[in-house]
Image: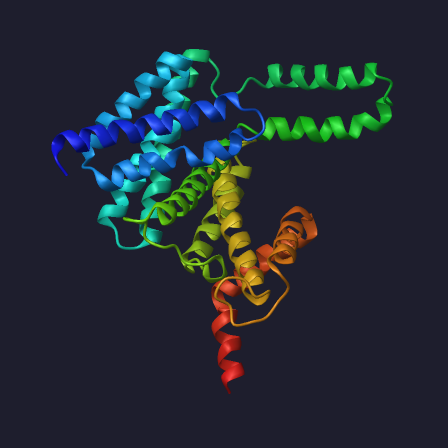
Length: 325
């Protein structure tokens, strides 16, 4: 590819990403779909061109976004979509494993989101890691005061208000977990959407990810759970929400998410999903079963326990060997 053609193509891909970003911004109902597709042209840009031309194309896209939507939206385009898209394409050229691309992509997504949070905190003066408790409680009081003014019983609202107030107070503590999970979800969705687009247009593609029915995490994750329990126990002696307690709480939540995903992967395998040899219900009923297992507290707790057990016992391999006998 000649330098001129390469420059033109990189500019066109960046412009297409901007169009998709604008569509996600202005279209109320289908905007989410365009938001998922926004990183795809940038991934192609990172795949087909060297880092210098990809960065130049991203700079052009960022400037176009600033012209149409202003500097803050262009910053969100750059750090929310651009860095991740270019990074995934760049990593896919150098990594043969889709899991490896995803792991580095999650770190890249997390770093860009942290930078975006720092800049947003500088601009707005609101630090999501240190929200003002009094202001948050005042907001809760205003919300439930509105519901009381509509005629709802104060007694029926009091228990809900207390639970809501506790959740609001805990929110700044668990914000690192929320940020990590959003970075992982953003990277995964961008990877899946970009892979879908690349398969349709042909040519270079992203390394495949293992099917959900084969997701397994190393046993060392259980060690992180033990560390989180020790940190929480140590932090409980030093007062409410000290540093040890905060770290322990966030590590435990992240580890529980991994256990949950491993348990859901095991369900998906035995329900016949992915490359499972088992016959099960259709995809719709499998999806409904997974959603129920996540949303019902008792079932989600049981799924975490199943994930821990599978991490040590590997039920897929164990039962397959028993069937062969």
